[in-house]
Length: 234
Image 1 (cartoon, rainbow, N blue to C red):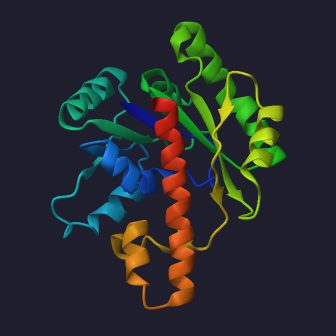
Image 2 (cartoon, rainbow, N blue to C red):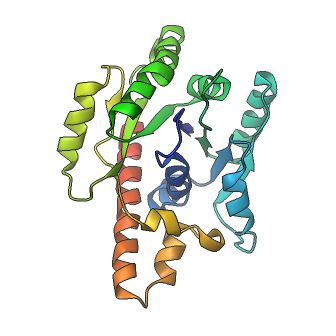
């Protein structure tokens, strides 16, 4: 199983989602082993994971893949699939060429596209991502139905149906909207200190009632998103 999170522009919560889903409890129960594959040469995930070196016996591994030769990339991913049940690809933003985006779409079973409900994000999607998805379906018709928007930085009190209806109205028919979203919460900006996962962070603030409540809400957000992803995979 290969799941990719991609977005050609930054600031949509893509890497946050990749990390949180890889370490979510619902993914941990479903998959015997998970590899978070970092395709971004900036190395944000690898730097974060290095701080987790003291965490032993985890089901989640992190592997950097900065190669740009397609054949070599396929060989590396095949090796990883021999070691892990599921790969989660964190695809870097790309303004030109979009080699990694195209490569990831072609190999993934599910493509998740974090996106804010803004005209800038929507236009960027139409200009940079949609042509890649359409080409993928022309090449492999079975890809139809594997592309999903994950709304991000949504107001926490927004009803899921409202945001789903919005994206279904503005997106082409080959792209669906996941009925779960990432709300705007400050927790997502702070939990990664010292290599912590979202669950680690929640445990670290248990003595602070206000912070713990916010952390628990963030955990529930991710578990709900993970539940919806598993539903579409079933």
